[in-house]
Image 1 (cartoon, rainbow, N blue to C red):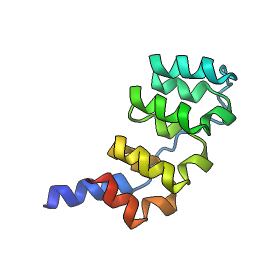
Image 2: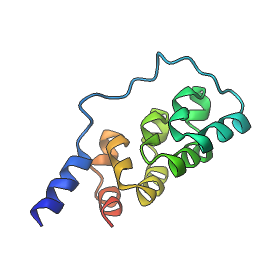
Image 3: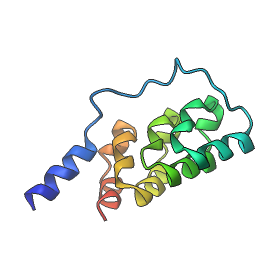
Image 4: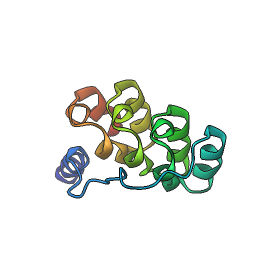
Length: 114
């Protein structure tokens, strides 16, 4: 049980080094192009325009290839409860990249550990 609790706490804590993609130049501006790129490598989400990094379909597709891809999603999307619930269903590690308020949300945390 102790290991389980420690794992849960680790997931809910913010990352010590937040991913700052704001300085990364976007390469993908068209949705079809971004979808093709993230299907090959989910971390390519970081190269999509901010608009596409806020697109639920693009981000979920990226997460299908790379469980950590939520780290590159827009802050608005990472703060959207229904989206984060879907993301943590797919990967418990997505909780690490959710907004502060959602990392503290009981429903989101419980979904992440199911």
